[in-house]
Image (tube, rainbow, N blue to C red; front, side):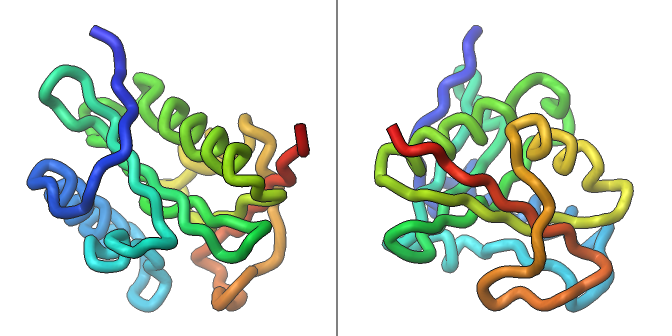
Length: 156
């Protein structure tokens, strides 16, 4: 069965559960004060587009794009169900986010993720897509527990 990537809402029960799982994961592996995940309320904002990755009736992952300005966006809330990790869910979600960023004319995407070993697969995914490390952006500040990335988007 193929993966179905579609826009969703944080109040969908399966999505809300995965958002809570993402928060719990971040809090379990990241020191207090260094977690930057979005809650369901923050994902329910006009500046945010949220996708779910579904296989049949099962939600396997989520990812979001927050528009920061006319030219810049941020990848937020990337999380894959533990049992689906390594199956291409994150890759498919990131492809959807990048495609939307191109569609709405953004020139760059940025993101923050953890710097410890638990986030190594996420960092590897972002680097495979061409994201490069950068200084903190927006309201982020220097934090040894965070790695910041940016991706310049080519204009068509």
